[in-house]
Image (cartoon, rainbow, N blue to C red; front, side, top):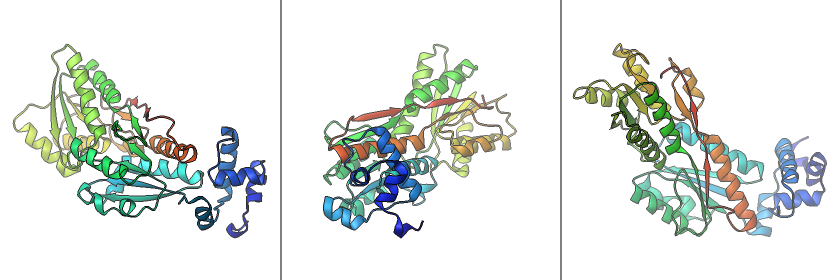
Amino acid sequence: MSQNKITLADVARRAGVSAMSVSNFVNGRHGAMTETTRDRIADAVSALNYRPHSAARSIRSARTWSVGLIVVDESPTYLSDGYTTQVVSGLGDMLNARGYTLQLEGLPGGRLTQSRLIRHRQTDGLCVLPSGDQAARKRIIATVAATGQPVVLLLETLPRNIADGCAVLQSDRKGARELAMHLLAAGAQRILCLKQTFNQWQAVSERQAGITDAVEASGKGAHLDVLGCGEGGFEDVANALSAYLETAPMPDAIMASNDQIGIAVLKELKSRGVNVPGEVKVTGFNAFDFWKYSDPVLTTVRSPGFELGQEAGRAMIERLETGVFNRRRAVLETTLQPGETV
């Protein structure tokens, strides 16, 4: 069946519902539908690749049927970040299944006012993944909220003064605390936390706080150092670790704020002839697919990045269909992922 011949009736037959139900679905009138019915129609729309005439829909509903995602990142290659890629994929997946498009824009914080998604209202709602110090992130959120569109924050706490908003986060602090406790139980006493400093994310600050919680609560005289490593690439990690070891002894354990940094640590330690985990234990964070290719396989924490993107899309769709966010905060759980480096 070719795309230009797919009709509401085709979708209705596949889903086993009336054409009116399909029309209500694609035009955002989901209130009277059961979740089962919505899912059946969404599956049929996806399977048939049905796309209603967006211009006609916009004229009838004064909506764009589009949601924006602004990623505030100092790097022009922001999509190379594993977490960002996971979030974009999950968000796009959820929105597309419900008949919405995703408009993506990445830019440094200093250029936020030049954002086309902010300057020209092209969307029904905005999602934002902010970075920078706490004051900078607050300014970013205020700028996005000033557009008058509903806002979903990703991996960032929602300020109380943002009325039409929702925050979708993950349990970074809890996950990092559990990982640090796992290290302490394995005998680590001197722990080095190695984190990216090129971008400042609330999630990374939460991970550092979780490690600090575990060390302070251990009652075993454990010691924690925190070290920045720029963008977190191989050279950045090697340079930061080399400078640290000029004035400090080799730690018992190195906790990286993400798996890329953790793998870079493994390579640097190998080049120095240091045995992992015999001499130094190493951990990462996120457990996206590439983590499995490290040798030895990193002990890490699984981040639900794709699911977090889906949850953000679900929250935005509910707001656009009902007029209100059903909740202001959703937190997805992280999971300890044992490997071979502890």
